[in-house]
Length: 155
Image 1 (cartoon, rainbow, N blue to C red):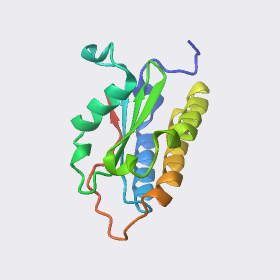
Image 2 (tube, rainbow, N blue to C red; image 1 turned 45 degrees about the vertical axis):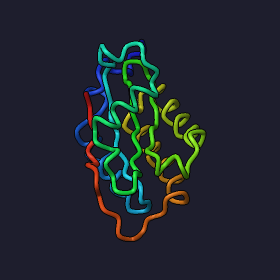
Image 3 (cartoon, one colour; image 1 turned 135 degrees about the horizontal axis):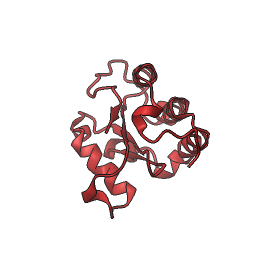
Image 4 (cartoon, rainbow, N blue to C red; image 1 turned 60 degrees about the vertical axis):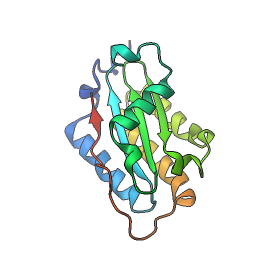
């Protein structure tokens, strides 16, 4: 294990960094009708041990109530920190307009940053990538409701 890779996600993200990420989510959401959340898990729950990451992301999506948005436009960036894996899960309002392959560049951005121990910057740049795709697929209606918290969840 590389020395620049803290053992726990809480050590990889400062409180200032998390506040900046929440601010970036708010800024991104001003340009799109989508609702974005980020959930970072140190490791999977025991009951999730055999599940593919897509299923873990789907469970977290529902746990966070992201399926309750008016336009079904929630999008979750799930990070399984100890496994160095991440997944983007969008509600039906997202995936009816954006194909799952769209997120490959966002995944590459995260992978590159995380491999160098640049966790906060990786998430910031991933949000910019997500924004780039959502601005055209789900543009802001001008009266965007902030239906979901922008706070990053760390377990």
